[in-house]
Amino acid sequence: MLIELLIGLIILSGMLTLVYSSMDSLTSESRLESTTRDIASELESALSESIVTGAEHILVYELDDNEYWLLGPEDETSVQIKDKQRNEESRRLELPVFGEGVQLAAVALSKDKIVKRGQVRIRISPMGTVTAHAVHLIHTEGGKMTVRIGTLGGTIDVLAGHEIPYDIEVIDEN
Image (cartoon, rainbow, N blue to C red; front, side):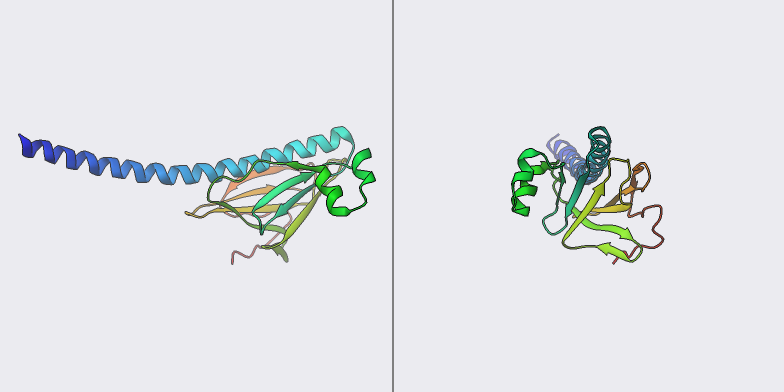
């Protein structure tokens, strides 16, 4: 009876180990997908806001610090601030932080311009146009996703893997 109970516990612990490792990989995939969808949603909101207010917005990707934010239009207060950095800080709208383990890998602007370090600024026009680009995200435990933004109308797609904007032919995966 005791041996049978021990065998049952060993089998149960093995099954729990398998379930736990599967859940862990699902969690990292969920974080990556959630972060990717957050970026797509924020882009859609920024595009709508820019059209409604008739004012330009700027989406900033900071690859070295693994963050992104939106610069709203200048208002009476920000115009009075002559220091460019302080002016931008007064217009900065915080966006959701990346999920644990999710990193900005690159922003592709053209087939020859793939930015992997530094800062990228994307202009969002009140006329409904956005600079075509692709945001490549990775998870430290594996997995890649892309937010792909088309120029006219700001068409936004969320894709598995690393894809490219409609008007970019080749992207360097290195």
